[in-house]
Amino acid sequence: MAKVEGYGVEPVPVELRTGTWRDLFAINFAFFLNPLMYLIGALAVSSGGLPLWWAVICLVSAQVIAFTLLTVAARPGVQYGIPGQVFTRSVLGYWGARSVSSVYRAIAAIYWFASQALAGSLGIQALAQGIAGWHLKLVPVALILAAIQGVLAVLGFDVMRWVVKVILPFAVMFVAVILALYFSTDDPKYQPSRVFHSPDQHLTWLGFATWLTVMVGSSLTTVTAMADFCRYTRSSRDMKIGFWASGLIAGFLTTFIGGYAAAATGQRNPFVAGSDLTGSKVILVLLLVSVIVQMTAVNIINLYSAGLSLVNAVPRVGRLWTTVFAAAVGFGLSALPEFVTQAEKWITHLGNIASPLTGVMVVDYLLFQKGELDVDDLYEPEGRYRYLAGFNVAAFAAIAIAVPIYYAVPATWIKFVWGVGIGASVYVVLRLAQGALIERHRAARSGTRAA
Image (cartoon, rainbow, N blue to C red; front, side, top):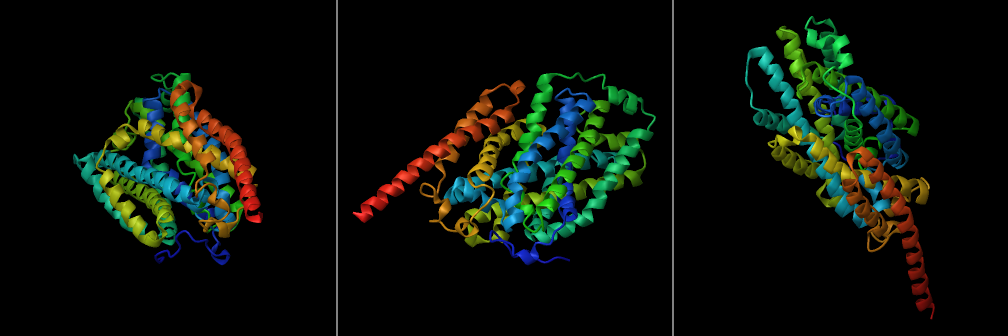
């Protein structure tokens, strides 16, 4: 069994960066192969009105777009062994990252924790009904699971990696069993010819554009955390293979499975398919165990990320206690069912900041930093990344301009494109102007001292 992790925001030593693409694949695959992703696949069909194959095309395309941007944000984790929030100091400024982006990422991760606990509990409800006729209440189930997952998350990265490897076979088993049930049933609602045709759904550009934005936005909320999971990885090649393969395969499977159930039943809860398609208690128990372990894996990752984000804001507290705090807040929020019943709304709100922030981070790292960071200065309040009193004002201004535009444009214009594009382009202009002002200020100070 792994021990409690000792590293917080400091760089992981080179000799400990031994993780392969297989390790990263397992972590990220478990992260995306989860109850909430099945639910999003179902919602794209039931709420978005997308036929099954169009839902798959939409959400997998969204993952391709998101990971094109996210792998850039992951590179500093591999290069320097630093967590994402420390990398963010180079973009937002030393104090900007510690006081603002850390809090935003922690909020996003805690939201995902609570919504996963609730989405998984929907699965438990449906399967427990099929197994024993039990009518379990959603919130108590979510709270019990959230408490257990919080304890596991506190232990850190090594425990997360160990637990994920143990849990991954159960996630794969869930996929295999549910697909076997889909294709072997005599129930006419689930016949492939009917579901693939999706007669109750009709493709609209509004539905496609809306769910493309929802999926991209949900993935981009991890932009300041992507380096967290790569700082034990040995190479950029391992990072790219691990992230791309896991994200795209998991995106396809979760959308197909969740969307298939929604196209067949018209319901938002994709887990009712299990009890619909078999009366075997053994199979239903296997599905139940799989749902529990999948949500456990992803919620360990969510709280680990939240803890690292908060320790960036208050390093002296330490990763252990910030993760305990995040777990306590996540436990409380798991009592709010609207996090899953209104998932589209909440994810869109999170994406309104994530999209502009991603645009700013990517263009800053590639264009202004040229893919290289001064690691020592990332930990110095008066160092290279001080900008203006510790804040990169150009970055915050660009995000502030892009956010209302993101909200203002109609969904048919694909909101995330405007968020990322406006954030990046405005930042380039403002950063160049800010740089010129800083240089003039420094020159003036030097001239005064010389005189």
